[in-house]
Amino acid sequence: MTKLNTTQRDLLTRAAATEDGTIDAADVAKPTATALIRRGMLISIPQAEGASRLLITGAGREAIGTPENAAPSPTSLTDVASVPPAPRGKIGSVIEMLRGPAGATIEALMQATGWQAHSVRGALSGAIKKDRGLTVTSDITPAGRVYRIVAGAGA
Image (tube, rainbow, N blue to C red; front, side, top):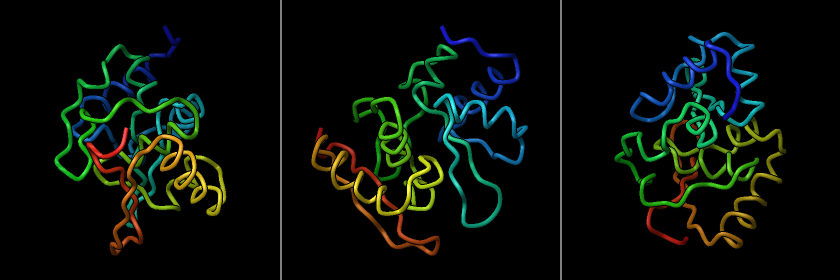
């Protein structure tokens, strides 16, 4: 089992208990959030307005002993319960963000992975669409173009 301090465990537990698996980054000490992001247990999702949100990953749920399917499934285009778990690493982080109820913008994916925009787009078309057979859709919103994985389509 992954070794976490009390603050890290409490933060992951709070995120796991929310409907969408996210919490407001402004409510979290930056060193704690940074440590969990580096370990792949949280993903930072920038918002058009206000503070970023922190999304718990499968690794974060595993670290606190909460199964991935314990979270209520969102009611948007992505139904997390019907899609197999994402692989670990940066591609896994991208897939988890795309499965989230809010989807993800290129900017959010760039921040989460440290990649440039062209690398994120390449991962979407190559590693996610072609290699894993997942269907990725995009919608234009006031916050910009938002990408999502469609539930039930692909693997």
